[in-house]
Length: 202
Image 1 (cartoon, rainbow, N blue to C red):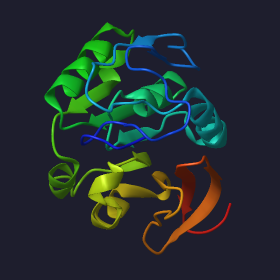
Image 2 (cartoon, one colour):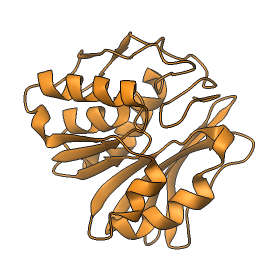
Image 3 (cartoon, one colour):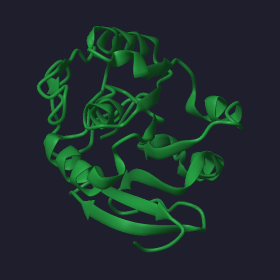
C-alpha cells in the first residue's frame, strides 16, 4: 500500500480503501469505522487481503500479544484484537495518525488493551529488549527499504512459536531472518504479502 509517508499503509496496493472509509471486518468490533485522517498517500490494507490474512491467523489469535509496527490506520492491529487477540501495540510516527489511533481505541469497548506508541519504528524497537509478542505485522514504507533494518531487530521480540506477517514489493519480496518458515503467501499486482512461522513448517 505504499508510495508513502512513514508508518502508514500507503498508495500502491490494488483496490485501496479510501481514507475515512475503513471498517473492521470481523470479530467483536466488526463494522467499526476507523476514522482515517487525510494524510497524503495513506491507504489501509484492502478488505480482501485482510480477510485472507486473518483466515490464515485464526487459530493463533485467541489470547495473542500483537505488534503492528507500521500501524497507519491501525486496521491490522485492531482487527487482530477484534478477533480475539489479548492486546496490541500500534507503532506510528505520524502525529496525526497516532492521535487518530488513540481516539479509535478510546471509544471501543475493551479498547484499553490497545496501546499506541508515537515513535519511529526503528528507534522504538531498540528500546524493547524485554518485550515479547506472539504476532507481528510489518508493512513499512516501500520507498524507505526498511525490511533489512527492522526484521532482524524485531525477530528476537517474537515468541518461540510466533507469527510474522510481512508486506513488500511484488517484484522483490522481503524475507525474514533465518529460523522463519513461510506458512502462506499471496500476491497482488504490486504487493507480496506473506505469513511466516518461527521454527519450521506447520
